[in-house]
Length: 228
Image (cartoon, rainbow, N blue to C red; front, side, top):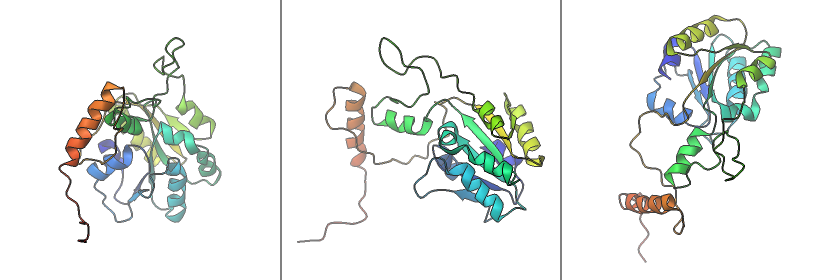
């Protein structure tokens, strides 16, 4: 997040929508322009990012637009890259591939569901669990096939250089990076009231329920029931 912010100009626009990226931006981003921050907070719709970035570019063609998107959202509506290429509306797309749904995986873990079904992995033939090898999905190659120029940095220094190159490019450029699905930004120290199953044979769920009930005791209601 910091590297992207440093690479952007004072009038550039960042676009994001779903996964952990909006939360990270909410905590860490400092816009330099009132119109430089475009994040879909309504329903955190997966797939909005590239299409939304295209809309921003059409509305403000004199601004550079940086789209931050994870692999889960990218798979929802990557084809809008074709539209951006066809309309000659240049975007800088930072594609973060962590091989799964990291945000919902973390939420799943917090309620004791052990990140079930949130990793892009082969199913184990014996156990039936999705804990096999990582799926051989090459989203950088996919982006190139849709007409974008693609850069594949492998270090922070290369990432910074790729962002600078993408910003000055004349065509839509995807900066593809592989990341750790378990890596996260610092906690906001806030608690999210997501109910946990009261009855479960899973130890992690039972423990999560105990934590949930404890955290509920610290809540302060804003509205109190009317007296009878």
